[in-house]
Amino acid sequence: MKTKSLKLAFVLLFLFFCRINAQLAKDSWSFTLGGSYPRFVNHALSFATNNNFGGFIGIQRNFTEHLGLRFQPKAVLMELAYGTPHNYSKTFAINPTLDILYYFVPCESVSPYLLIGGGPTLYFLDNPYDKTLDESYFTYQFNGAFGVEWTLEGDWKLKTELQYITVLDGKFDGTNLTKNGGILGGPYNSYFSIDIGINYYFSKGEPSKLCELYDGIKIEKPEKIDYEKIENIVKKYIPKEVIKEVVVEKPVIKENKWVLVGVNFEFNSAKLMPEAYPILFYAVQALIQNPDLKVEIQGYTDNVGAESFNKQLSEKRALAVKNYLISRGVDLQRLKTTGMGSANPVADNKTASGRALNRRIEFKIIK
Image (cartoon, rainbow, N blue to C red; front, side, top):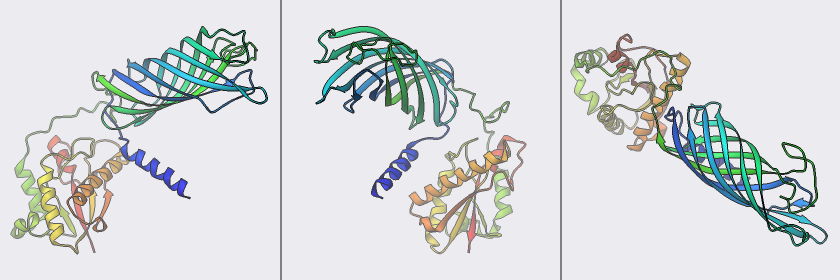
C-alpha cells in the first residue's frame, strides 16, 4: 500500500511540473544527456545478468516540427553468465549513432516519436572462459526505438526511450558461438536499452504556426482601451450609489453576480493581463473582509473557436484566478471554479476590444 502511494505521488508530482501547449518552433537545436539500462536479448551464453548500465550525450537538430536528426554517442557495459558455477563475461561498448526521429504529435506536451539509425561500434571483451577472443573489436550497429518527450519548464524536456540494437558481429556477447537473431537475422547479437535523459533546447527558430488551433485566424493586437465602454459595463452590473464599495469595502451583488471588470486574459491563454492584478487584489480584500461569503469563480472566453475548447480554456482561467486568491490568503473551501465558455458575452465579439472584454471572470455568490 505504501509503495503504491509513493508511485502515485511521484506520477502526480511529475504531471504537476509538465506544461501544456509549450511554444513550438519550426526548427531548433537541443542538447541531450542521460543514463541507460542495457540488456542482452540475443546471445550464446547462459543468461544475461542485471549488472548493466550506460550513459549518453548528444546533440539534436529538428528541421521541422515533425522531423529531427540526432548525433548521440553512448557507452554501455553489459554482463553475461556461463558455466556451473557461474563465470561471467563482460562487454564494454562505445557506439556513436546518427538517428532520424519522427514526432507524431509535436504540439502536445507528451510527444511520442519513432527513431531509426545506426553507426560504428568499438567494443572491449572480458571473458576468461574463451582465450581465442581478442580484447577489442570494431563493427557497426543498427538500431530502432520508440520514445516520448515530456515537456517540462521552459526549454527543458524529459526524454524516455526504448531502443532495440543489433550489432553486426557474432562476438559481441563474448563468445565465438553463433546464434541467429536480431532485427537483421544472421549470426548477430542484439540488446535493448532503456534510456532516460534531459533535452535542453538552447536555440529555436521562428515560432511554429502548426499548433494554432484555428487556421486562418489573425491574432490582432489589442486596440486602445475604450474606458467609456468599460464604464458602461460597470453601470450595467453595479448600482451607481455603491461603486466605491465594489472594489474596496465590500462586494455588491446584483442577481448573485459580482463582475470583475478588467480581469481579462490574453488570446487563447489562461495568462492574466497585467491590469488584472490590481482588481484581483481588491477582490481579495473584499473576500477577506467578508469571511462568510462563498463564491463560484466563473471563467469566460470570446466566441473564437470551438465551444468545447472554449469550455476547457475558461475553466483554466477560473483556476488561475482561484490560485491567485488562495496565494493571497483566501480560504480554499470558499472557492469553486467552473468554465462558462463563450456564454453571456458582455461586449461585441465582432471587435478585438469586445473580445478582450469577454475574456473575463465573474463571481457567483454561493448561498
